[in-house]
Image (cartoon, rainbow, N blue to C red):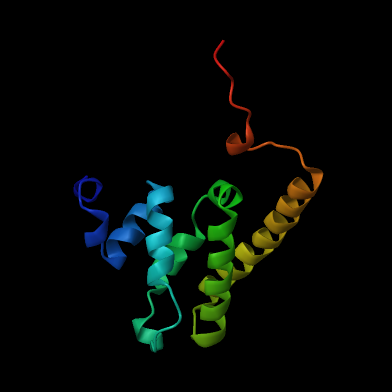
Length: 130
C-alpha cells in the first residue's frame, strides 16, 4: 500500500514493475514505464530494465485497445529491444505475442476509423439541457 501514496515522480523502475504487475492505475503508469524503456541511450544488456518490459507486455490487452498511441509506442520499443539486446526466450515470446495482438488491434482500429461509426466515449454526443 506504500506505493499507492508515493508520488509518481519518485517511482523507481521496480516500483513501476510492481504496480503494473498488479494492473493498478495503468492510465498513469504505462507512459512513465514506456519512458524508462526508451532505447535512445547507450545501455548495455545488463542495464536494460527487462523486468519492466515484461510487466508492460503483460498489461491487460483491453488497455492497449483503448490506448492505440501507447500500443504503437510499446510495439516499437519491444521490437527495438528484441533487435538490440540478448533477451531470454520467454521474453522474446512475450514480444512476439504482443506483436501478433498489436497487428490485430491495428487492423481493428483502422476498420473502426474507416467505418465512421462513433463508438468511443469521447465521440458520444453531449446532451443539451432544455
